[in-house]
Image: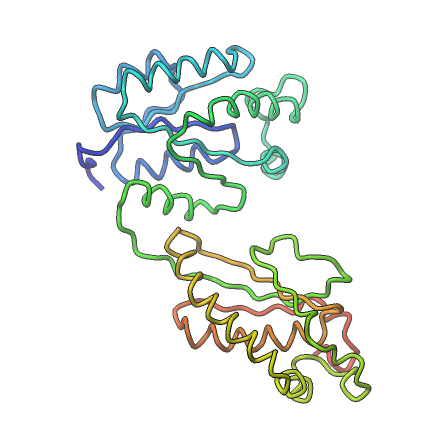
Length: 292
């Protein structure tokens, strides 16, 4: 991609193992930055006169103290005020699960994976306040991380097609754990208490007619559509390429399903370039004749 604009700042990229540092460095390389990784802080200084560069210092949480490292970072910032610090983070449970899934040994694992992760977290938490930019990578894909870095650099990128998954569910069966946004439809009258509607689902026309004959349903839907029409492009602008919206009612059979379908229709017409998916999580709980 060529050499980056010499007016851009140099970056110091840091974060615990498993937080996405290597992915971030790859993104900087693809944008044309010279990248120097795994070097000591004194060695890093020797590269800063070659601005712009991206540096990733090697920090051993068992060999350095958090306070000494913080002091070294402060001195570096003082000597090079244009240097930008990018901190990548993720919760400890996310870092642990990534190492377990990858079946890799943590570079500082001496007494166990948990201890190694916590030792790094203690070190980087002290450094976090010094950062100019902070990205939590716990729910960020590699592509999204690259887009976030491009945004930090004010580099225009072509927006990724966005996948929006609408998941209906029943609160009595628990919340969808991966949901970004959760909406509760239990403020609407429950078709379950209508004997003729009880065996049906929100996919059936009689249930939909029952719910949309209620003025409040239509009022809510209008406000809901306006909200999402406003925020979805903003998520996309921030580099998010996937979003899960969970829509719940008591059992996940009537209200949440009908509103999920109505919202999907609206989003498909409003955002034809988006990939809109619908999932009815509790379908296996529905009456047998409604499951196909």
